[in-house]
Image (tube, rainbow, N blue to C red):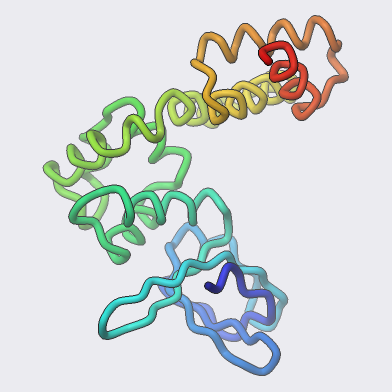
Length: 201
C-alpha cells in the first residue's frame, strides 16, 4: 500500500499531478481542492495517497489533506454506486468540511448541485453517511462558517475529538466546559481531552 508520496512536484494539472520520488515519477489523480494547495512545479511536495485496484487498472489518487483522503475512502467504501471518479468530483465541487456539514444536516439540495451527483445520489449519500458523519460533521461545518475565536476553536476541537471517541454532542460540550474550569484558559486541546477521558473512565 502506498500511503504517501514525498518528492518533487514535476507536473500539475487541475485533475492530475506527477511527483518524482527518488528518480521515479508517480502519476496521481487529484481533486481541485488539492490542486489549489499545491506548491509550484519544481518544489517539494507531500501527497497523501489512496491506491484503487480494478481488474484493468491500478490508479493512484492524491490528496493534500487527511480530511480529503478520509472522505474519499468513506464515499468509495460506504456509498453504493459511488466510485473513485464520482468521489473525486464531489471533493472538487465541495470542500470536505462543507460536505460533512451538508450530510449531517440532510442538505440534499446542496449535494445534488455537485457535478455528477443528482438528487437520488445525494439522497443516498445522506442516508448512507449520516450516521457515520453525525454531529461532529455539523459542528465542524458550523465552526468553519462562523470563524471562531482561538479560545472557542480550542473548545470546538476538544469537543469534536470527544465526539469522534464516542461521546454524544451534549456530553462532549459539558465535559469540555468542566475541564476548562478545572484546568484554566491555558489548557491545550490535548490536555482538555485527556481530562475529560480521565473523568469519564
